[in-house]
Length: 216
Image (cartoon, rainbow, N blue to C red; front, side, top):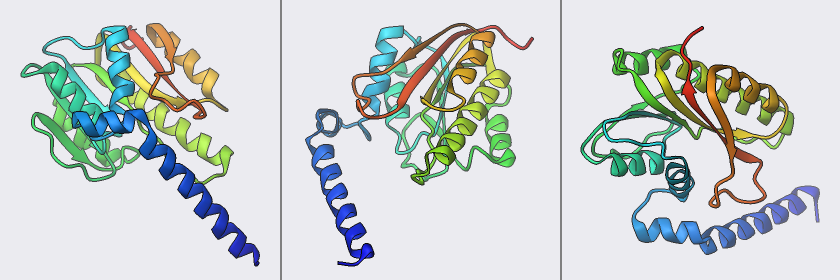
């Protein structure tokens, strides 16, 4: 068998394992049963409950929103009060009461559209479940992931009201400790969370930064 053939077999086995794991996953089954767009909704669900992050009337921005599980959950939790803004590079089917912008958050023009849509509205909570497309080259993937979370923190610093919060997905690796240290300088409290719905083998954790101190 050629090297190409071996690689194809390995990929096929890997895909089969992923599909078996995915469709046997309790959170995938729950998402389907409860009408959520992704299993990721249960990561946020746990964090919202544990840390009492949402209150009626809040303004929330969801970065990396597609397919919409987090925005869907937040809108549901807020009821008729508050506003939810969502952004993603991918298209997202509309959700009633969610203002969606499609674009690449790394581009200044897209950030400008988001800021214009907010129109100076102070934000209570910034959510970021953004992650780069994985190349398999760990150093490059980590650098791309850190770039996204740095942009999320920079955005939060511009739009959060004093006392506001940032919840951001991080991948453990180069730049992680420094990033958490920087968050601690700008927020009253920073805690790291690994929700039950986050797969054990994943390097992802969520940094919850509360009590934004405002610009220095």
